[in-house]
Length: 101
Image (cartoon, rainbow, N blue to C red; front, side, top):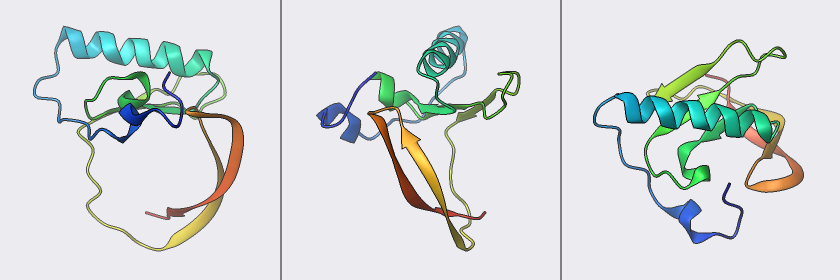
């Protein structure tokens, strides 16, 4: 897990060209890492893999895994505030502005 101020966190992730066994292994490892760190989401860049992969599981029982490959924000609508943490900044939380949609 990379932590701020590691410069590798600033590297722009490359698109995934093909979903194959290697990408599946990365996704599986990312879920293992995210759960071990007690997170609810993890971008591949945080584990020094600079591909556009995000894993998410906000369920309490860890049974609702969501994988995003090459995600794009197509629309923005409104803002709201929520408290968030970041696995790259351990033990700190802050109120953040996020999009409603």
